Image 1 (tube, helix red, strand yellow):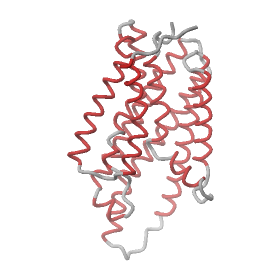
Image 2 (spheres, one colour; image 1 turned 90 degrees about the horizontal axis):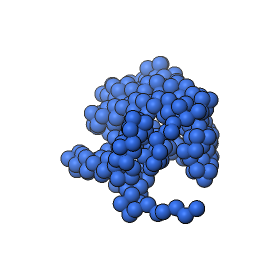
Image 3 (cartoon, rainbow, N blue to C red; image 1 turned 180 degrees about the vertical axis):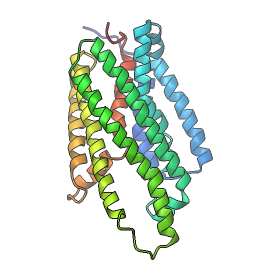
Image 4 (cartoon, rainbow, N blue to C red; image 1 turned 90 degrees about the vertical axis):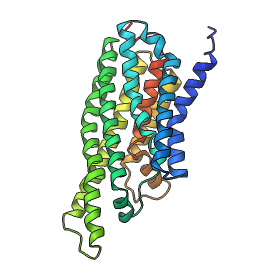
Length: 284
């Protein structure tokens, strides 16, 4: 059956939303840190454009379709809201490569990881609404499993982000104040513990994404090609996250990339965009 092409405004909105994560990563690693007065201004502009794009893409139309339509819009916004926040990282650049650099930028690192923690809460909230709506549509297995896995992963994610943003700041401050002093005996075991926590929470987030993709496919909210893409990328990312960092290249670098805290949030962000594009609210 012939499908009428989307209006240009919707196509442009979709393209803009798709480009936000790769553009953030490319600018952050390619250009590096810039003045906060610049990146805050650009971030506010980008956030406004993302919200405007979401409205043009289908948010306004769904909102007018009653209670279920409004719930679908809220679910979608919660799923892609983390990347609305994370786009600020384009101006912050990559993490400092030295302890001195970390200490000098301590306040900014705390802001970075606080934003990541906020993103985790938004993702969990969106996933809770998504699970409820998928259950209303009749899918009661994979949606429940996905939310259960994510409910275990996000607390670990929050603990890991607090470790990076706050514990390491204080530890590096002590180490740089007395660089010749012997590292405390507990420092090595703590690093090993949080490596395990990091691997576990990243792998579980990807597993939850795979399970949600199965649920969305069963309820008809994902096309066959999109479903295969989510499953393939989710399973591959999960396996790469589980690989030891000392494995030969390119596995070590690939494992590092998929475990960057903001990266696992990309596929839920795309789930949100997909929900906004749907004309019919979930459960109808």
